[in-house]
Image 1 (tube, rainbow, N blue to C red):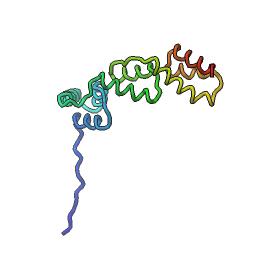
Image 2: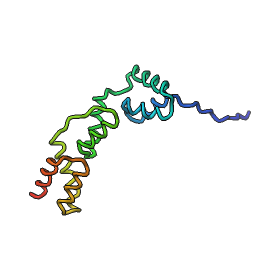
Image 3: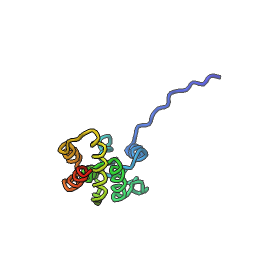
Image 4: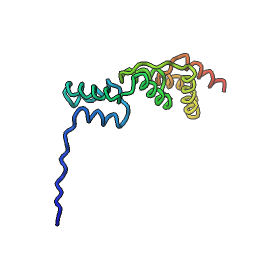
Length: 147
């Protein structure tokens, strides 16, 4: 007996299923989901999908998500200014700035560049372009000069 297998028909995505797909990949803010789903589905379906997701508690509270995202960006040595802009774009609340952590990140960046570059003005520009504040840059450059 031969079996003929017909190709399975794909069901069309619903806003709810697509939202679950996005959340399965990584955590999203409500604003992010609304924007992504809004590109593919009517606003009524988007709002209905978001309501279901909120009822089920699948969205991380904004403050908690902000902390999680900021921690990830801190590990990548991103400046506080960069992190605040990133969070704002995602519709998330700002996080507190740690002067010590900013200094540590700036030092890490400079230590990796000092071996290659000797020009302090270039290093100052590098940190400035990465969003570090002038106070942090001044402290780090002073430390580099000392060494």
